[in-house]
Length: 86
Image 1: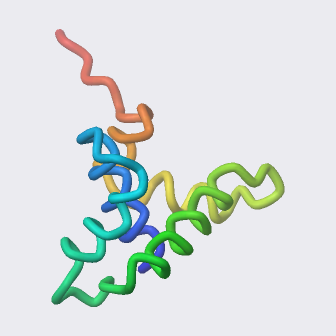
Image 2: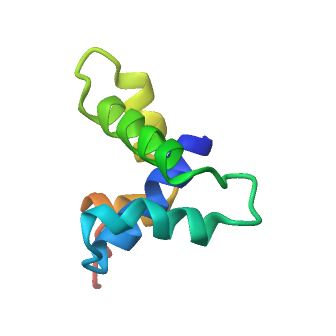
């Protein structure tokens, strides 16, 4: 799941409209001191791996793993559960 957490960090930074070339450097800085820390190049590799996994129609198990990992991901991806008002 290290790739997922790196990917999620990049998605959050990109949501803040950070320039694409700065995203992976900023992600490395935010992950410093965690078990998910890596160089900006490695974080980009992790990001690309998760993106490929989410797009691969022949690998639904990986896609499901990423989509259901955390509620924040469902919000980022636009798949959050709607709350019904009564």
